[in-house]
Image 1 (cartoon, protein in one colour):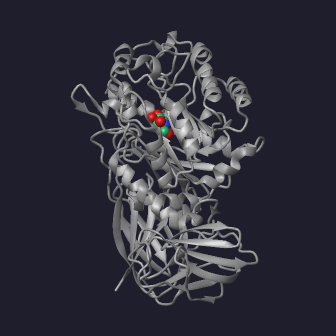
Image 2 (image 1 turned 120 degrees about the vertical axis):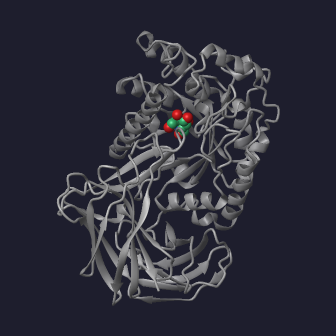
Image 3 (image 1 turned 90 degrees about the vertical axis):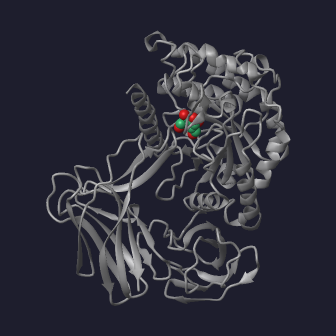
Length: 592
Ligand code: FHN
């Protein structure tokens, strides 16, 4: 019970804090950091979580923990005095700063952020402020942050520090440790004054020019106090960017929740942060690493919405990167060597996501990231109004033939694409290409096995609305599902505009989650005067500390006799006492 309470508390901190931060930043127009351009162009960053927890590898007293390994002290309620003993055996003899920088360089990484101090309170650098640091308290005695700052800069990669400004489980006055220290006896101001602020000053003074200080989890300070701290720190290095998790909208760019990508493009500078497996800190028994295909899709998807991907690596206690990560990063780097032009320095895609993939843009250029080839090899690209000059496969110099039908561009693809993960088609044009990024019309083509239409593309009617449901599998491995909710009455609905390219029969599939109370209620999908009725099926209850289960329910067939524009409306069949379900995607599957 106690454990559940803690998990819920952590979930609430994360859930409640981040959306607020995001909202405030989005609305902040007063101050714009002048030094954002490098960050906007960079697109690919490396997050590194490395600390005393790395030597535990997710295991404590014979028990394997799953999920965020850097939270082990908190999860196992290890007394601060016992945890501090871990420093005596922390000796990362395999650590080699040049090698880490080389791995990052080969991966195409442009900036890095490493944990100078995480919630455990241990300083991974030579600190005069706290002797609980890697130089004073471990047999290693070296300052890896100094070595890394030199090596990464030499590799022309911007270097920055993560610093847990509020949570510090080692300190009596720090945030978060309620198993050793009484909450009511804590003096957060004293902790900030005596540890956090002086340490941040050390980091901003002793390690050369920093790209970023990545704050995380604000707390214990008012907006005014936070602003004073930010101003005083910015004086030390005005060009250094501060992440939005400093709180109160005082950051220089926007971070969403962990592993969260916004559903639509964002014009402000932003970053999506993802774990390499299911944990930030090293976990020996977690081999669930993202493949190069997944990393490339994340990169392209995030770039298509105007952001950067900062992908985490959790080195082990000896100082080595997990071998799967080295392999997949290397493969990603090889892809970027060929296709990097379609990622680095781009802005969000002027053409919205299509059944085949996503787009990114540069002046007079569009890049089509083809994740999936159409079976007839004719790539359909809607909304093209510019005057086209040349279309080619990036990295091959191979020109592609094409024709235009109104604003629909049809490109002939070769039988074999040069890369099955993401082959990039480059379009060069003159004149203005209008921005259709948030146009909601969905292209439906029979050339793909299934077409997913996320509910963010819908128009909401009545009381229906769009929300993000955040959940986790283990601990801190957040998943975010954007859903249409609040469909309770026949006047509440979600409508999708479709451009159906070929007539034929289509199966309607609804991808949703549904609680016990909502199950068994009747809904209707209406399209082209055809009504498909369905009953909702129970998938389980929603809780942020549990996996959120979805069902892809096949509800029936429709026939489209002519190609063209159609509207699909999903709504309750009659007035309901509970909402119908939480719908994530409408899926259309062409059937023969
Ligand atoms: O609690 C931390 C977590 O350990 C990790 O550092 C992530 C990275 O964004 N930030 C916090 C949770 O959001």
